[in-house]
Amino acid sequence: VQLQASGGGLVQAGGSLVLSCVASGRTFSDYVMGWFRQAPGKERDLVAAISWSGGSTYYADSVKGRFTISRDNAKNTVYLQMNSLKPEDTAVYSCAAGPTMGSFIADPNYHGVDSWGKGTLVTVSS
Image 1 (cartoon, rainbow, N blue to C red):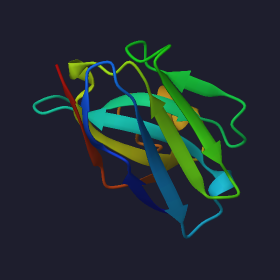
Image 2 (image 1 turned 180 degrees about the horizontal axis):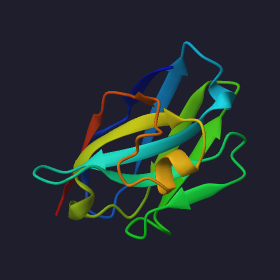
Image 3 (image 1 turned 135 degrees about the vertical axis):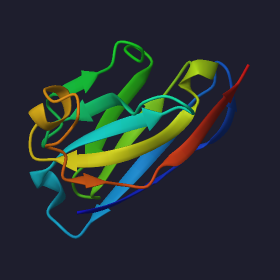
Image 4 (image 1 turned 30 degrees about the horizontal axis):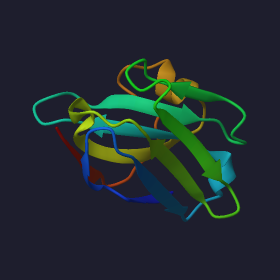
């Protein structure tokens, strides 16, 4: 599956952004979707993941209560609503697709993730 993320930009601390990731090429609802981020000089981290139907979600502790992942299978799109943004949220955000939730949360190296999209830069100013 091919993935294309968009929606990044420059925002002040406390502001909000919505990222979108559109999938093509395969049946979108067959995939668990995840959002990752990578800050300069740091490792890539899982931010959030959502199950095939959207009934189950996972969030990193650092974003719980501020970020919301959702999906619209009719539009082949997964979203990341980011509220109360902090400077430490500054990173390149990318979306990914895998067969199971375990692909994202059980393997710290994410070997089970099938597809990675190009990222979109989010910059939060203080």
